[in-house]
Image (cartoon, rainbow, N blue to C red; front, side, top):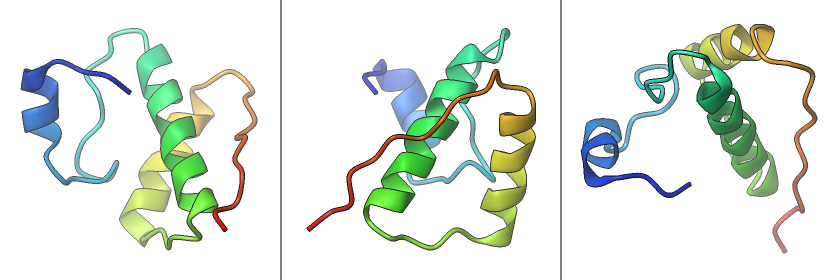
Length: 73
């Protein structure tokens, strides 16, 4: 997801447990969470407890979305 320098610097290497995009309406957070989960699934990456908790909270406020991904080869 393309972002300006300021949000990119504020995010750094943080996961959703410690950083989410600033979004008053939540739609950007939903998109971010879906893309985050898709990346984790694609590369078979682990999710820690804090990350999972926040992703579930974000998902609870999002309209129904499915995560599309293609497993990495």
